[in-house]
Image (spheres, one colour):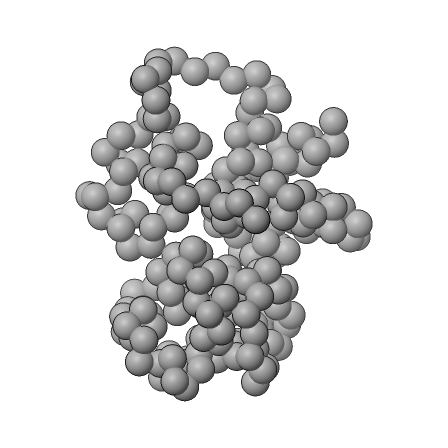
Length: 208
């Protein structure tokens, strides 16, 4: 399956928002978006006026890139969300937040969602005591995620565990850095998702 391998900073510049795709670098003066907060390309600094469709498309692209999904994956999540009870847009964001790679990132064990996806694929974690290597797996309330014992000396985890005190852990997650584990204490609701997202635009786009 094809995956974007170009500059992550260009994605942020294209969407006109910080998507925090490069971890700690996004909080420094080396951040590409901070240095050039306009779309890439020869005409990037010109005035851009989007149509209604363009606004909806950009919102969908922003969320898709934020969570590191391709179009097929994202559409499948939308279809599943539309079949659930409740508000489709909120269901969609809740499901995206519950992806295992996102949960590992939100627990502070890694510095970015991309890093989370890689470490999950390389089976560095146990889910409820069982080895898992599927980043898109959706966690449930009560699930426990543990860094495997032989992976705990990995520099990625050592560095991030040491800086857990400086990270804000979402309400619906509990983390015990000393035990190298985290627990899903609840399911995320819309108020738990602090990213600047207008999910209504995504629903309108796919409803055309």
